[in-house]
Amino acid sequence: MAEAKQRSKKPLTDKITRPVRTRYAPSPTGPQHIGGIRSALFAWLFARRHGGQFILRIEDTDQKRSVPGSLEMILESFDWLQMDIDEGPRAGGSYGPYVQSERLELYQAWANWLVENGYAYKCFASADELAEMRAAGGGYDRRYRHISADRAEALEARGLPFVIRFKMPLTGVTVGDDLIRGAIQVENDKLQDAILLKSDGFPTYHLAHIVDDHFMKISHVTRAVEWLPSFPLHLQIWRALGWDEPQFAHLPVLLNPNGKGKLSKRKQQFADAEGRRVPVLVHEFIDAGYLPAAVMNFLTNIGWSYGDNQEVFSAAQARERFDLRDVNAANSAYPIAKLDWLNSQYIQRSDAGDLCRALQPILKAAGYSVDEELLKRVVPLLRIRLKSLNDVVPMAGFFFANWASFQPPPPDILIQRKMDPPQTAEVLRASLPILEQVPDFKPAAQQAAVAAYAKSSGYKNGQVFGTLRAAVTGQRVSPPTFETMEILGRAESVRRIELALKSLTQESD
Image (cartoon, rainbow, N blue to C red):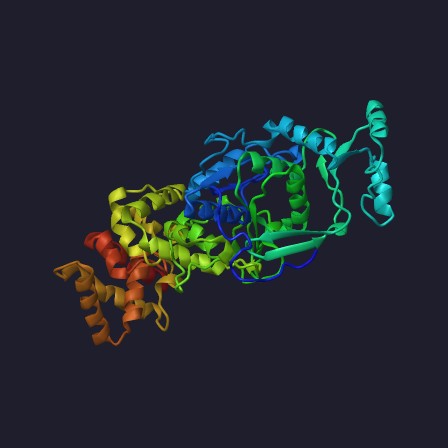
């Protein structure tokens, strides 16, 4: 296929002259892939920018690939991402039904119209004939394109199955415009006569999406660049039907994080070369503890830029600026490392109540009994430390465990760098009266008193603070030591330090 010619951001069809209506038309083949959602997001943003409508249409004409429950998974993905749908299987609308298998008569009628008006024909090529053509090193050789109407009628009367193929022009060029890639020009003799209607009466994508886009008044079609080779065929079908074609935008694909290979080949999360988990299905992002706003920001920023060197922006902000003409035509590596950073930014900026509600089910799923008032006190300590909502379990799960059954950590966690068991025991023993006697158990008072001890005894603050952290939490990493002890309370903190001291001295005996 001829390469698209690069040009300025201004498209050939510069002005929007009809109400903006965009659509996302997935096949119901299972969980939603993030590449498809990115295509939907760009269509949704464009519609919202121009005060238009966003339509969900289910393309289920390939019945063999349909997976039960897929529609529910699609709708759940949109609900989670908070992308509202104006028309669709659940939303309803004036141009339904929005499931293709419920529109078969419409496709059949227009396929027959194309035959009757000389733009398509009935092809009776058998499986054996097609196999022979492939064995000869070519594709379908158009052998039924020129048979007479009487001959076609006779073959049909004999009960031979047939498909309907489009009569692609044999000479000349097809010229079209892509909002992202510019002018597209392809020689017609490079293209085959594509099947429009299969022998079972179901349409192919080539016919069905055009009929649907026309009758649903779609103004802008956003789809993956893989459809660019079929773009001239689709333009010819639009023009044969005599309908005003929409504007097209063929979106770049997402590549694997290393920039090699198409991400869409992945059916589930995988580990990249650096061992990072790479989610690719929407439910995997949910399970991994990502916030929907962060995922929306992340996807919007792949192939499109908000500008002003601003990487963190809301969907509402993106809606004010988004234009399909500003999408980069080049395929983009999937920058998964950036997602963790973005997610941490959104966690930090989250409303405290919203963050509590998001963390509570994660803690409960890990087996903890969650005291809501306690969680409200813990959340401010976590806000700047979480990259994922799931980090709450290893970071702060100890707050919600049964305090009465707390077990002190083993020596390898308790003993800090460049310290030995006797030194660790000395720090624990000396800290007990300090914490018992400090008048104010606020973090600042605790820290000042303990830091004074560290200075006078020759230990580094990190060694003393780290010993206390491990003693009261049972782990190496936690929220700040003195804020943690404030929440646990003086009595519980002292009790845990005593348990750690007893355990360590027993280990040393």
